[in-house]
Amino acid sequence: MAGKKKEASLQVAITNQGQWDELLATKGLIVVDVYQRWCGPCRAVFSLFRKIKNELGDNLLHFATAEADSVDSLQRYRGKCEPTFMFYGGGSLVAVLHGANAPLLQKMVLEQLEQEKRVMEQGAERKVEEELVEKDLGITHNEKVPVRKSYTIAVIKPDVVTHGKANEIIMKVQEAGFEITGQEVRMLTRAEAEDFYQHMAAEPYFRELVQIMCNGSSHILLISQSGDVIQTWRKFIDTATMEGAKGEVTDSLKGQCGAGMLSNALHGCSDRSQANRALALFFPSFRHAFAHLQDGAEESTVERTLALIPPAISREDIILRIQATGLSIAMKRELLLTEEQIRQFYWQHLQEDHFPTLLKSMSSGPILALVLSGLGAVKKWRSMLELQDVDWAQQESSDSLAAELVAHGEPNNLLYGSHTPNQAEQEIQVVFPPEQTLALIKPDTVEEHKDEILKAIQDAGFSILHMMAVCLSQADIEKLYRKLQDKPFFNQLVDFMCSGPCMALILSKFRAVHEWRAMMGPTDPCQARETAAESLRVHFGKDILHNAVHGSSSSERANEEIHLVFGDVCREENQASLLHEASATAEGEGSLGFPAEIAAPATRPWISGSKWMDGYT
Ligand SMILES: Nc1ncnc2c1ncn2[C@@H]1O[C@H](COP(=O)(O)OP(=O)(O)OP(=O)(O)O)[C@@H](O)[C@H]1O
Image (cartoon, rainbow, N blue to C red):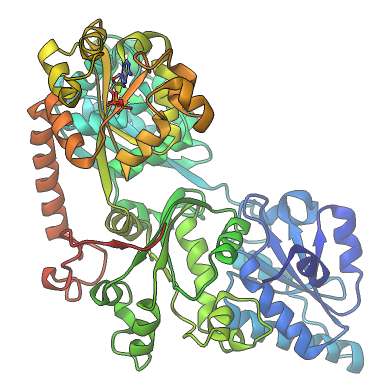
């Protein structure tokens, strides 16, 4: 694998205007990878460049990386999401390529080098392609660089819809220059309202707010505009006015239509992460289609993707490579794939001659499944995989993932990545099935520490499906802790747990039971100090009885306890959401995003819950 040092010696790193000017004075052809600070240079092409350099050994061929944000001359390339390769000869731009298309990049490097040599050796005219830059970016010389569109979710709340004012507001929104890209009228379920307002879960008015949102239909709008639509929208709803019945201009939209602090007519997300979450909640299938609306929308969205790594690839190596792309590993597990599962993921190879070898390799041991998360994760990971098929990857000197496979005598196309954000979410659910657990914040801890604990829960990646303050009855506590009824401290425990309200939560995550118990730490905070110093019980527990939090001890217990504390509410909602999912799947593509004929239920026994076998984790 290429170390940083090797990379630096192949590509000159340009980080300021002075270095850029110096670079352009270099004799020969310069191929510059122009990158954005948040994503770094394109590592995927590094081995290609190294191979070309090794093969040609040409002193007139130079490679460089340049950070668009730090070089004034590259201003017009700022905020671009695809890797951009610029070719310079004699200080002039001679070609541009957008995207890490390895075969095309290789072809262009060779052609441009030949051309530059003809210019230098035979006095041929250099084709300076100034216009090319603009053409490639879709703008003309005199136009300004277009400002990117951004999006947010706006909700016209039930109170306004009930009073027949929704259409008036929608007209006002359009007049103000907001583009309504998607619209849905629907009554939110309780779970959706709770999810949507999860950032307010700790507020005393949370339940009332959720109730208001479930009282009637809302208009959910996906709105977009050039620039920062999140802020513009929030400002708009606070300041725009509507005409009253007699034509007089009255209060702001919120003020005029809203009937109180909670029934305040309109919602606007307060930041990008809220907007992304709301988009995923209300327009999940739209998310991919939406990519064309704004330049690099996918890359500016934090998304998740599923990566499958074959047994032959070194785990340490792949993790280092992924980290170098700026993506983070949100979840990982080793597991053995059944033949059926391999067929599902690699259906595009089913008819190929190499399929038997692929099948053998993928079932030769545990594969590593990863959930990668970050800006444009789907595309980023796939661009690492695209290098699998090109011939040059088979060179032993090559640094690509494919070359590593080939070096192990394996086919070079074993790595897998989801193709779209929607597909990724579905596949993640299958490979990392979410589990639910009951968490309680115990009576003496709720008031003082619930916010910190809730934050820790969210930071750890749990979804909070339900949350409520609850005074558990003596009978409930006795059921909850029935296995301890012979213990000398049992009565004390029951009294303590009945001494005030607990905060009860249903948490969801892959292996939620285990993860939540690991976060809580051992029963006794004193002992926890020795073995789990960062655990919640160390931070918030007082002693073995007053140990801050409770968590179910197994998946079965979690189901029982959730039912005990939350009753039938959840069961009804689960059934409703299952029905909703079933009808959504019936309308759309196969449930993993595979073509319907391949994803027919009979060919997907594993989706309906057949076991995924863990290897070592
Ligand atoms: N020796 C003890 N003395 C007093 N209280 C105890 C003792 N052991 C356990 N408890 C209390 O009983 C609760 C249940 O005990 P259990 O053995 O099930 O521990 P746990 O599974 O870590 O905790 P929890 O069930 O609350 O998640 C503990 O959380 C603690 O409040």
